[in-house]
Structures are given as structure tokens and as C-alpha cells.
Amino acid sequence: MNMDFQTACSALGTVTARDEVVMLLQQITAFLLKGGVLEVYGVECRPLELESYFYRAGVFEDAYVHENERQLNHFGELYVHRIGALATSHYKMDNRVCVGICLSDSTDYYYSALIRSARFATGEEVFGPNNVLTAWLRRINAQTHTMPPERLESLRPGGHELAPLLPLLEEKPVLRFEPSALASSESESPLLFSVRVGLGDKSPADRDLPLRGVVGPLLATRKYKDKTRLLRDYLEAHALTGQTACEAARHLIGSVPSWVKQR
Image (cartoon, helix red, strand yellow):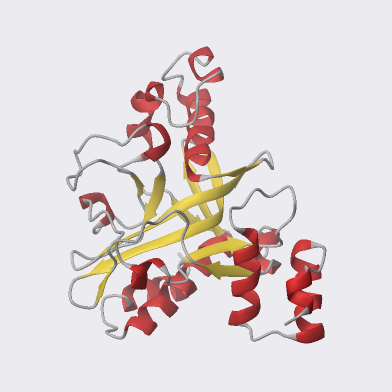
């Protein structure tokens, strides 16, 4: 395991400033997006887009964290979203069922990263957390033969028919890092941070934190949500204006929107 990654994860249990927590969460996300591999039954999944959900009482109380037991002290294991707080609570289904990687190595804080988009070994890139989970389970089922494959052919993402496959993801270590010499092209790709997708108004202060990490560039074939917001936040985070902002936009999306020219 990457030691800088481990150090950053462990530091989440000691820092007390809110901005320090955000910085560490972004750093951890960057490690995962640049070289992290999640493997279940021989099926590899490389994250392209992650959202951080971290809760430490009295320090960083993110109102959007589920506080499920599987987000607590289950480092390196997958967490399939559930209705309640118990590890045995029923799974969420339909468009609400998603999967994240638990990164908490302590009973003092909850921490998981939602996998919003990913690339599989075939090179196929899948966008949207529900779609990622469904695509991964189809591939896993091809290895385990848990269900007749024809039952999954026309399955809508997150459909209840997936329920027998969901336990296959949990209660096992799945995270590893590629050696730098073998790391995929993501190691040299730009990373963009922005706000998480689809959160309500429960806590605007938490909602507006830049806890969504995305591997660039923002190609037309990459169906990331809110690309304009991603680009805008990238330019603002790097204080890019004028010609420099135009060059960055051209590199990231292949063109220069009029609003970028006016920066």
C-alpha cells in the first residue's frame, strides 16, 4: 500500500481544522484516482470519479454521511449503500443503490468514497454510480456464475434482481495501488475538484465543499455531470484568467467557452 496514502488517511484521525480535513480528503482522492485499483473476483475497477464522505464527531460533521457501520473501521473494503446505520441493514435499491470504498481505519470516524465513474479492464468507461455498480456486478457474475447471465442482460441499473450479487462485494479487502511504472494514463491526467452531485439543502456549508474528484480531460465521450461547474471550479482553484484560462479550457474540454474568454 502506498505509504503517503496511508499517512494521509491516518492523519484524518488527528487534524482538527476543517480546511485541513478537506485538503487531506482531496489528497487521498488524488492517490486513488491516479493509481488505485479495486478488484473483486478478478474483476478490476479503476475509479475515474470519486466523492468523499467523512464524519468525525466534533471535528467534521458532514451532514450527508450515512454513518453506516460499514463506513467505520472497514479500511479497503467496499460499502454498498444501505437504508439504515447497521452493517446488516437492507440494501438500497433502484437508483439509490451505489458502492463506495471504505477508507476508515478507526472507530473514531466514518469515511467512504463513492465511486461515481470508473474504467474496467476492457477499457470501457462507465459513468454514474448506479451504472458503475451494475456494470461491475455483471462482470463479477460472469466469474462467479451466481445468477443466470440472461437475467442481467436487460436489467435496469440498480434493479432488485441485483440483490443476490451485492454481498459478493463486501467483507473483503479490494484496494491496491499499481506500481508507478505500471500506473494507467490517469497518473498524468489533470484532476478536477468540485462540489458533490445531487445533494439537497440539508447543510449548504457541507454541500458546497469541493469533495468530488474527477479525472480529466472532460472529453465529450465522458459523461460526467456538471462539466461546466467542473471547469469553472478548476479555473478558480488554480486562479487562472486570461490566456492561461483559455489554454486550460482548450486542454480540458477541447474548446474555449465564451465565459472563459471573459475571465
